[in-house]
Length: 483
Ligand SMILES: [Zn+2]
Image (tube, rainbow, N blue to C red; front, side, top):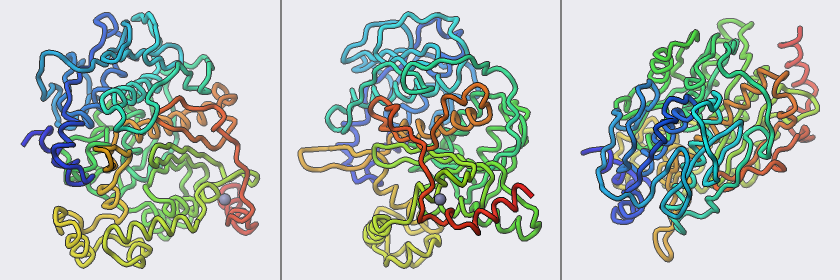
């Protein structure tokens, strides 16, 4: 069975689509192309490669111009050639010049600006900007999804030109080809967002220092439609191990270590071994609110976090400044959250206590899940997180398949926007002399199907009822980091 059939079966199985609906919506004649003269430009080349990566995980029968020789196409089916073949595409996504219409999307980028369906005359001299390239690919994918899925996909799906610096017209000088010493970074949670973060790190390719990858899970098939750093060949392997191998092959001066465990366990074990153990910089991308709070509870000196919900991306970073919000202020425990967990419990046919336990799925849990969803094999869900299985059953974006039925389908570009922006926030923090005036906030909210709105960036203050308002917490943090 090839990736196209697997993908459709997978969508039907995990999102609740009728197979016929999944085929009708996702087996489409989409072509991705790039102007011949832009193929020599690094930024355009990367944008093209990443758009093919993201779109191949949504519309697997797509075709595309020949991919440049590179270590980064990372198509889900582990090749560099299209699986589909057709004469007349119903939609073409084109990197370069052209005039946009219903069946032709143009994608360009220029000096920090993303230009989707906007007139532009690109040149092969466009300066190197990997983050701009990746975000252009994400938004081009969003536009293509809207045109192919139409009213089935709720959201505007149309973008005015904007700068990725301030979501307005901002520009600044920055040399992306200079070495970037990242110190010691711990990346916890290598899921859809973590994948895009690592893709951005690898595309930039200039990091030196140390990276610790922490995630306890194996790569499974359903997630391949959102995990842009992985291929089918790696199904069943530890994500941290596959990610390390791929990063090692990029030729960076970066020492990558992998830890196949939960971040909390990783931290506690190291701390008990050596009380001087610290997490200096944490990239946080787990899939639950309460996990985020536990990450913050380990008191990393600096933290960058990204999350996605249905039609939203949220970013936050902090240095535990007493005046400003921490990750727990941003994701406090809410009655709403227990409502969500109750919903997960009901959906999975389990008591709420099992979900609250934070444990992985046992054989007994798996049997209960299987009795409600016979299509989910017991052995396929044992050992997984409750939330991961729940997300498999209803993933990122809502798709209407008919007059009344609507289901949630995973759309790769949503978590890709989150992961690439997470990398950009990290780079901005490392280079305050360049980006300081573009990072006067600690909270960003955006809707991936419309223009990012500058006024949804805010500097959030500490919440007075958060644990971080407790002077004892602050004292522990101060003792750890400033003694
Ligand atoms: Zn707080």
